[in-house]
Image (tube, rainbow, N blue to C red; front, side, top):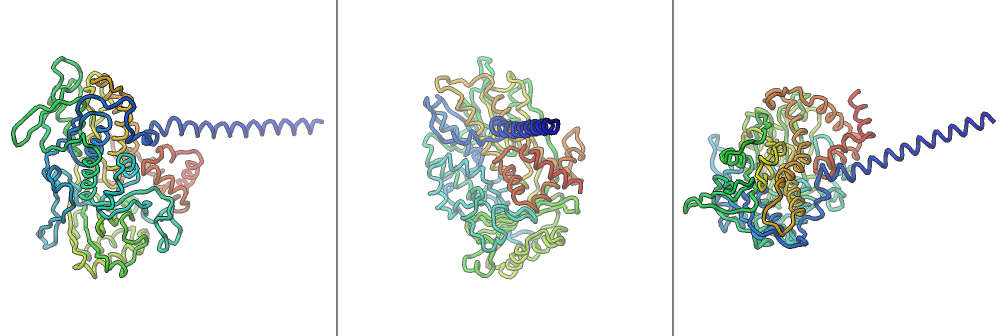
Length: 557
């Protein structure tokens, strides 16, 4: 009897353990689904994007300051909520009739005789650099614009599953034999691949054709007009045009001035009692980009794993642990353009030929460790041979300080209730992660969610509207900032945020490095990492208990 009693007790205890584990797992899933995903991502809010308001539009006008990616996406969002939207953009290339058409990139002869690209957008430093369009951007565009596919057809781009290699790690969504892989059969999230020029033209066409209440006008916002009745709001902005200065009334003012972050300067000039704290650091980043146009008749000569359809990517970030100071980004973009960027800390060489670009790649320590796929070198060999036909042009760029303006930490009575900042205007990131456009879309979706909670009957936004937006925004973009800053602090010449040292984030760097090593062994782990990078999953996913245990084991090896 004692033996039976002990067995029964053991079974009862085992049952309790199993039930406890089931409850822990269920609670973890519930926490992720109902707390972490809504707080740290825009996935839940995305489903409402582009849908009409139930109670009609809010009376009044929104002024969007800046007409680049963040400004155009935000204009479309605000047009669904307000009677009218005015986008104020200083560059004529954005406001002229030609702005709706793709043009040929202008070039000039550099001091070394190389063909250098000439930017049509002096206020967009990365105009000619490689652009990574991660899936969040496409998901947002798909919701906002019913005419998206029609306009993509005009530029010869189709959405395809994003094919990406991160250093030595193959696309986890693809079979092992990538050369036989048909991208259309992949389960990877859809994305598009465009040059910056093609992306902006696409967005301008989408906005102007689908939102008749949006006006894009040429001018420069020079200051903000605070409410004369003493209320904590803005009455509008002051715009400088060829005809002089004039006031432009606004119920909502959106700073979409990009890396200029002009909103901070306007608020300071307006005499606010409190300004946002600035976290900023300098990674001393230099970029060289080469753009080759590969004619269709040359495609069979050098085959690449996913063909020449826009969308395939190779991202090889520099590994500080082996002494690398620069990395490589390679992609096929619109109009048969193969765009390659070498970027890193204090990278001073200027490879302005296919041969010198190849030499720069093969000089990477990672190349000598076979971390780059072999076909990338084969492709560079092909470009060396057919350089004349591919007519390359180059671009050299130094990236300045990365800065986060923490509007979310301001007091609600110090921040104008109807002012928001979108994209780089609130936080400009190291572009190496390719998350700039996705972050701009994430901010626009966050703004959309905040506006949906605002009734149409009132002309004035709630007293804490701006603070609510910035706090919601901060929760979603802080993990991106922390991740990129951690990686940048691995390089010794980085000037850290005031009050920090380069030792900040050391444990997280080790954790990330171990996670990436695990990616090479397990495609499912790599898929989890990519979904976080794509902003399709909360960053807490990389600390899920079972995954964390595996990563800690990798760290101890």
